[in-house]
Image (cartoon, rainbow over all chains, first blue to last red; front, side, top):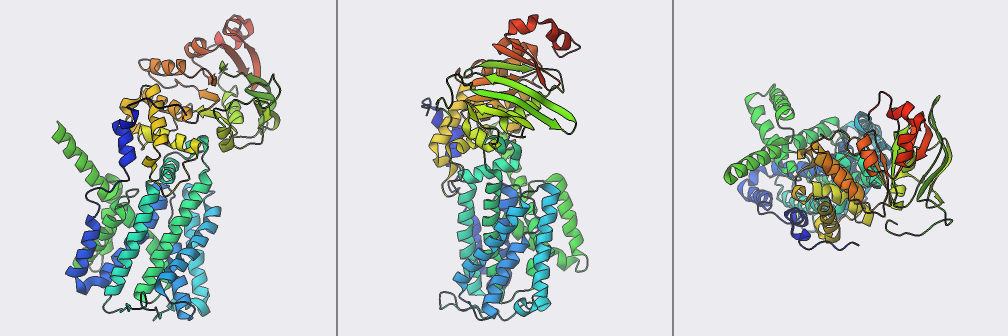
Length: 337
Length: 261
């Protein structure tokens, strides 16, 4: 290897790359807020749990959409597979231990992600978008028809989930256990995704997103990378679905529906994709805005959401975080001048 | 792999060679019976009018498309059936006529991606990219050679077109090629900036065999020690720059035509 010239390694660009995975000062803030929520709003922990699950799901989507540039409208397929894995195993008395149940949900979702990814990721753009949608629709219909196992249209309710770690009960009316459990799982999954995103593998995903043809020309096994990323993302979406089923003690067809897939996409676009924390900002903003709007306009609140999306798509392609970054840069420039 | 200089075949094996290479697109013969040799350390130019099949030829050499018939040999080894990604690992790299860059990544990251792929760091998922100091330093070193360190942390999309052309070159060099195919390296670069590219090509390591595909006769006659002229998918003439410039047939079909010179 050619010995690098002295001084090259301490160039600001090299230092920035060498240090970009380090924890930034503001990064603990969302976690502190999440913990503060637990103490400040004990009556709203059900809502809080829902937000945390949504964040986890959105993070899994960010990995494929924001980093690898895989445009999917069917990500709820994996959420639903995870949810039904937990639901079917618990309802039929096969397995109801929560932590290992999540691992099983991740495994089954990963297998579905791998299988569908090997086929779907041969395509790009609109074809890929339609095929992800079709995969999800097929799974939804399968869940609808497999009444004996899935409960069909009614789903499976009153799932007998065992106490967490053998002691902490899941109480649907007072979901303190659920909230902290979901928060812990979210944290672990986030750490994993953050690690992957800042790794050389994550860098190559960004390369694929930016220019797939050039990645072929630098000798990258593009399809294998995409399938790996898709499988990992499916596993995390499966965990999100599984933990949703555990926290609510039920599963229904909605876990596999277009509604859920579209909402998570909206959340990611709203918060800012390819930014890790866009999922947090987007989920919080989406849920707050829909809550607020549905109070003012109970009949037509989704119209307001639609308008907001149009504005974001036209003027803030990088979502709320993108706006924040632009403002931060502008302040920095003014400060420097 | 790249850097290793084993003579894989007979003593007379060229670095890169094609024998009877043909490619048809339907009724169109985009490449007809091309016999071509690129020697180690060569400065070779491939010229020809628009539609002569130059790009098809580059795609055949890099494995983007497969020939209808004929063979491609790298150091005497038949690589006709080897796919693009594997050919890169065997030491064939190229740049593109129109920039194909990672536009929203920094210049350093653009080179990092290529170097990480070559050294086999790219599949690693659980280590930070920045901890691969070898990859970071080699990428910086390449930028230093191309006098681009000042731009290292800038996004590619913020650079002038001429500087972006240099990033094209930096990515290809990050693959440590033995064969470098430059597809119109100065295309689209304003004349005020073109010296940046020309100087960079001048400074390419001598052991790399370089094939420049270009219309720009200034570029061709400045660098080429050997020129191959393609017309209608065939090799029309081949020789030293002096021979090619003096060849009346070449002048008739190309240099003297309503051409690009």
